[in-house]
Image (cartoon, rainbow, N blue to C red; front, side, top):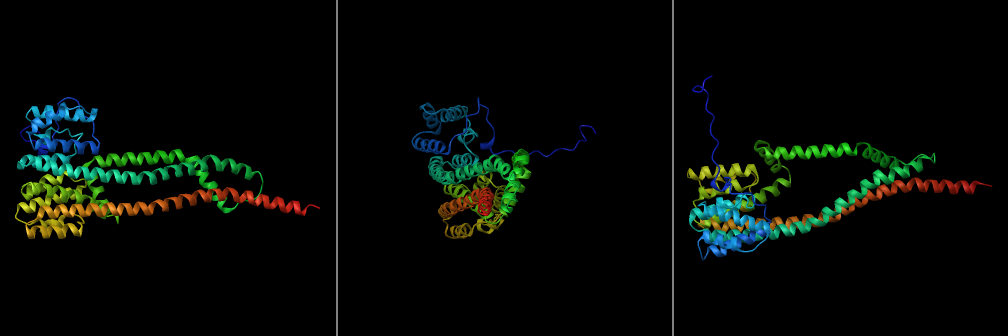
Length: 377
């Protein structure tokens, strides 16, 4: 087949300009959420009184830590080269939702307003992240320590005691035999089990890096009871907050939806948002297209309908995001508060069963020894 008759391959759609890579030296390191929020707040404050290029230059000249200094220096060089701020921000330091919001601010000419609203949102997210990490630290540490103790007892302590019990020649209780079977299984197959688990984890990571596999996994997660609802509400918070910010900045609704879609973490929500944007461009209302979203929270649907009817879409979307965020936080605290004593109870019961399995044969031996001594003339 010659070059003229070779079928043409359709070109991939171009990336939004804030997601295109920029090669200006080495890639800056990732920023912590709190450091990123602080940098956006400083940029918002300076952008209100000076051009954005001067604001970036001022921040770049300030002393700071290595990661922040590197990110600001890379942004400064890109802005000096004539690149818009949204594209100039290093992708390693600023995720797509931040770059999309800044891109919307530049497109609408209301960048200082959007930077301030973005800073408020990032500070709230950083505070929520800190609270959740602090609440999760104790249960996770408790599980790791308890599992380590259980595995050590089963692999090192139980077998040595079992050898002494076997020399007695007495039949072992069922519980002791069951614990010994688990101990032998872990001793013989523990490394193989660890290798299989690591292989499964590596396969999952590779699958998540493939767009088609990631989309299937995302849709499957949304169908899980409990977890699916939680993930939908999490995406709804990001969706409503970002769309509210862009709508308040004066962007057309279809364009705001186009900026919002790439920032969502779940593929099903991204595809649905693209579909909603297409319907809005065709003349549909936002509330009429909302059923395209997978399992949208009822509060989001109701407030979107009210916002469109009253002409107050942006504040009601922001209210929906704030309410859903608060509900997620309260629910997470409740689940963690209930999970902590449950974890202690389950792990304590396992340790207690292991100890009981070791003590039962010893008690039997003591009983037999006492009976033999009593029967001796």
